[in-house]
Length: 83
Image (cartoon, rainbow, N blue to C red; front, side, top):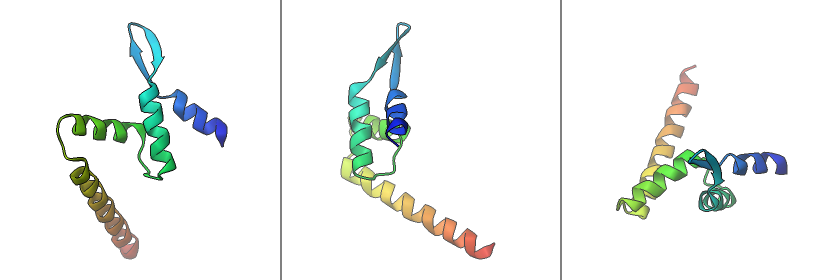
């Protein structure tokens, strides 16, 4: 299990001038996300950070994400009932 976590953290990289540089902030953010069981991957976290940097209210963003997850679960449940 630890090796999978290390692999995922090692995958968090940015390429700059041909060098792979570990983005420590992104790795820390991903680890915090996992500790809080957010279920978000690095791409989703990056999108959320960029939106917040552009002025989106973090609480509103969180509410939208929660609503989208609920809608997705409801849709999946209704698909399972019809199959």
